[in-house]
Length: 96
Image 1 (tube, one colour):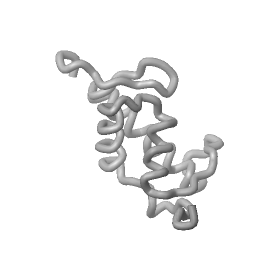
Image 2 (spheres, rainbow, N blue to C red):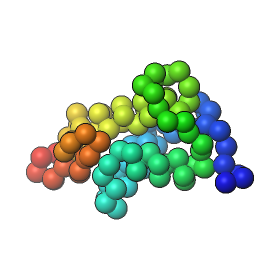
Image 3 (cartoon, one colour):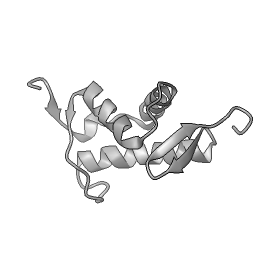
Image 4 (cartoon, helix red, strand yellow):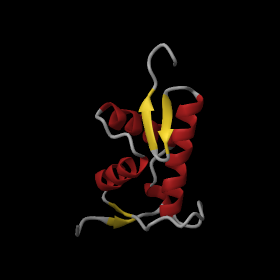
């Protein structure tokens, strides 16, 4: 983990990056938002703090908040459906 780095605001993926990554993970069977965020964090080698619900206080909080907004937007556009807390699935083609 020596090449991992503290999260900074500049390291947070854009919403479009979060969206494409999230959809790709869902297609691979990753449907829970926590493992999605963990995978994004690992891919970017980011050290994040556990969120405390102060969504813009630090980069770790902003990371979670931005991903949550992407999930919300995907639901509004009917690309995904929320099954339960933190659990999602891709919408069926006739629903989207």
